[in-house]
Length: 417
Image 1 (cartoon, rainbow, N blue to C red):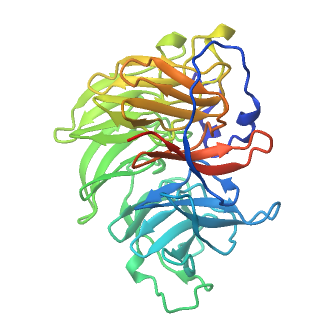
Image 2: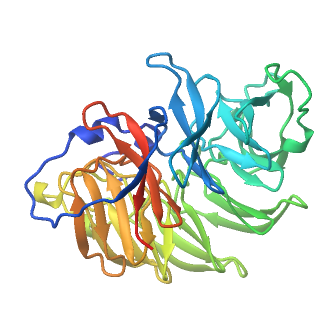
Image 3: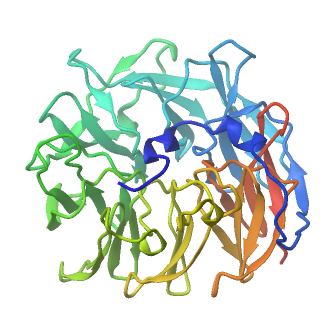
């Protein structure tokens, strides 16, 4: 792997990024229009905020140095805090999941906390390791109808896709007393690989990518599981990738894309490979555009946009880039860029009104998404290079860092109507 900073860094907030700004290039300036700044607590887990309807859910620190956290619900229109939960132990790196009247967060390896969407009151605690087997919930949780769906890891060879029916949770019990509910197995990989990558869904099918990382160098499996029948309706063996990217999957029309150490696409109707791009240590830096550390893929007008974990700048003798645009029909690189003296990036680009926005610790960068021409950079904007950005109406909701403390605050950048 040719990353100068490996993708595992995706899992750790990059507090130091805001202190690395170096001036001196001749890029055009850009002035950011901040629509609102939330008065929420310091934001933990920059990459794991979620937007549901007109509310943003984010993790905050309960009290400085306490080690505890709380969940904050913020009005996406105004930035006002709607509620804060009582403190709980540190959460897993899983974005809050809303199903119906409840929002779910994941604690430790096997605990799920459920809060009321309207009030933030604790509704239930679910213990999924009902038999004390060492069951661990993977971080790739999604919602499907009334189910929480996620990978399960117990031990070597004991990995599977599972679902948990939220309708069986008893809301009349003492909410502080854990209820023991066993997740239901949906699919078990033929190899010993983990169900690790972020799950994606279309209609009633959930798509999953297993991993062969540190197993036996077995091929990984790209599968589609009908969640109503629990049957495998799509399956491909992949022997050119270890499946260890965090957010590698994207579905658009009839194609499913895998952007990991390699880049490929498959037709969902026929199962046939549409294209494949692989990279090796012999690949010239300027031709290497893997996305294994991306926090998310952005599809727009026949192209896919993402960032990766490369750091540095071409001025240091390398031709590495870390902001990319590829053709969605061929996988070919369309354009790429890297900020001056860049940190590693894992953020997801936001595209609105024919402009692409990439906030990170060196400023807010604005591009023409079609050709990659840099429109300008707001160097006063300290963003989270490993943070997730949300598009809500004409706002990009993102985390802005304090340049002195590294504390993160939710802000809405006005992108215009």
